Length: 350
Figure 1 (tube, helix red, strand yellow):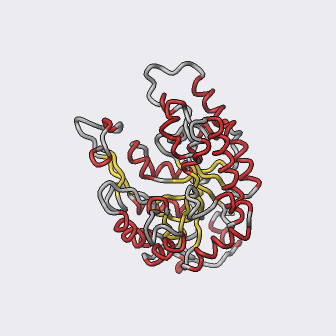
Figure 2 (spheres, rainbow, N blue to C red):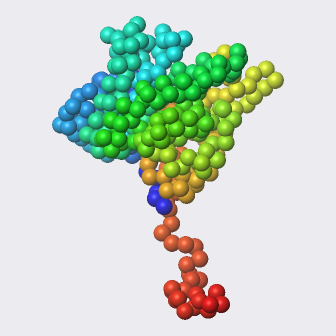
């Protein structure tokens, strides 16, 4: 077993236009001051990281790494959640997601998809240049509008959807494979990969591609009423990234999983700062450690009540306190004996 690395922090929700949140140097110093040891960097803001440049220039990648290291931190992973979403967009959501794209491809779905695919390919090369072995993204969605089968889905729709989704992602997965980086899909409502079954269908459609891995985030499973601990038992070999995020689900006689179109503050299911929700993190960390998870524990702050800076300040010690330093010996070694083949045979009656 290995001790999980951390605490890390996903910077996406903290970036802003005021210091220290408007520069990579500033936000890294802020994160380090709170006790974080790693940062997961989003790639949608060129003021923080120029993804294309990081892919094409090892010198620039080393400069980015140097800024982070100078603050006493490591880069845990890069993220292309927004770009990954645009690899597969159903027309029903085209206008809503258009804002995620570069201005020059907005309003042009074909050009937007090509741009997103290239962004992911840049991310594979940038990750390699930065010495990283895992990357975070979303799958996008062609079928999400049919998630509840009413009217019933036409026969063959799901199979056709996963075939197309896999076709779009295979060139990207191959690029990640060529660069020695695992592509980790965050399993998330709104994506075609939103639970274990949908991930398995996608994996099968890609020919069980070895780089099609998972970002584990228990908060999304609390909101889906999915067993997030058994999920680790089932998929631990594919879990290469870990977002430490809390959530709670309190259904009422008026509203449940779907939320009634309410805002986050009024929904039965809502994200909370670490320790304020219902996730059993002691069991989560125990299972991931048991299965020799080799990556980082990265705070993703999303809370509809608490201030983000307070969530971050509390999050670093929370994660640190949950990381289990693995034992190097068995607790009953004191009562053990040396290997003795003769004795073993005698005990077995041989």
